[in-house]
Length: 140
View 1: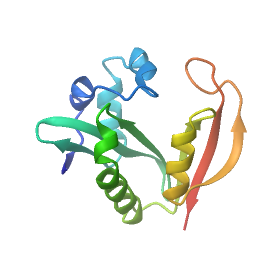
View 2 (view 1 turned 90 degrees about the vertical axis):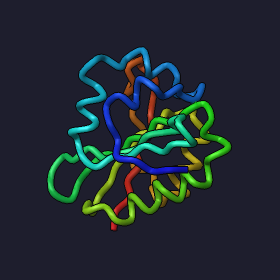
View 3 (view 1 turned 60 degrees about the horizontal axis):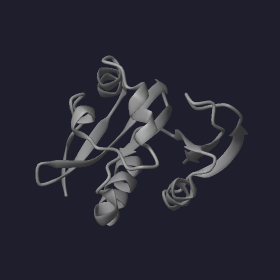
View 4 (view 1 turned 45 degrees about the horizontal axis):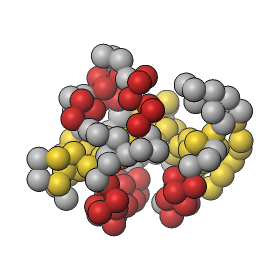
């Protein structure tokens, strides 16, 4: 897997995994640029194919929200993806990093726990579709 800085056009080329595919309905022309400008971010490539993108959106000094959008071929690249994201989080400037996982997304909960996040709260009707989510944080 090759790591490159995230660019807004990467979202147009990313075929999301089934558990995240519904989010593409909410991508408007400003979404990619907002992620690109929001903070540090990268994409992983398997040859020319984007397997996923990940980043941090800065709220203020020492606090950011992590985001990850994984492709439909991310499974076969998962070990490389996990290592890259874990390293990215380790070297970030932020003391507190939050993320949100759809309440019913078991694999997502397992992964964020592997990345060192701990659950902090349950949020009703959080997603664009009105689904519940769980707030996680990784604090050092």
